[in-house]
Length: 86
Image (cartoon, rainbow, N blue to C red; front, side, top):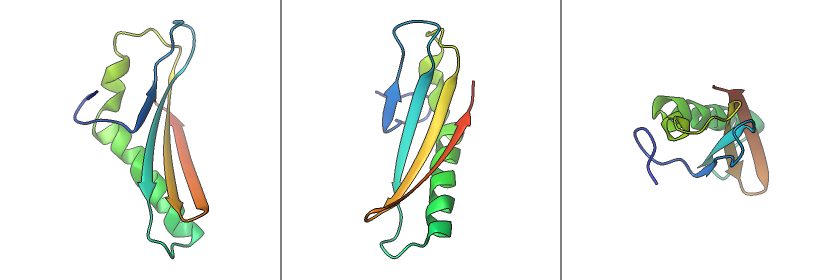
C-alpha cells in the first residue's frame, strides 16, 4: 500500500514495538554498470525513500528505529546503501 508520496518496494513493519522497521527500495542499473555507477544508483534509491516520505507508514508503529536500504543491481552485480532514518 502507499506510504507518504508513493509506494516502497518492501516494508517490514515489526509486530513488537521494540523491534526495528525496514524499508527496501530496489533500482536496476544499466547492464554494463561499474561498481561506482551501482553505488550511485543505490544512493538514489535511498534518496527516494526519504524524498517520498515512505517513513510515514511507520507513524503508528512504535518501532525502535527504521532502517532504510537502497539496493542497486545490474545482472549479477549488486550495491547497497543504508541509513537509520528514525
